[in-house]
Length: 126
Image (cartoon, rainbow, N blue to C red; front, top):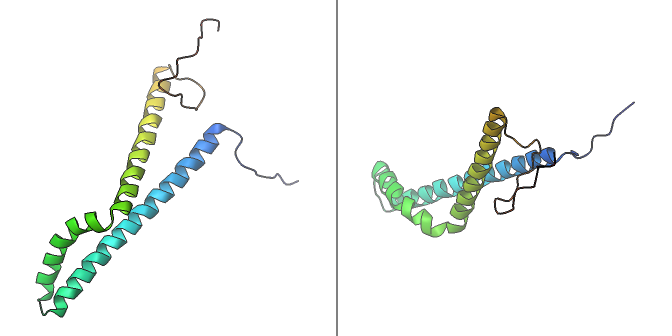
């Protein structure tokens, strides 16, 4: 007898899959930005070598020029990486706070995060 495996029923499963997708997207964005910056470095160094600048000098100049130039040439990639890192940091901070609350014994058993502006539910009747 085979069991069919479908999408996770719990919201924590959905949250984990969203985190994994976000992590893989962040990894892709970081890799793309890194490759773009190294490509810019190679193009600049290659152009300098074509003008008969020694290779080590060309690489040194290309590193210094490519760093600020990449901020101007690749602003979209840089923003995506920064947003992904900020989101990942926010998720890790929430996870850490939830774990600390569980260790203190004050954690809400539901894995769903509430909006901080939303009022706390009334639990006096429990």
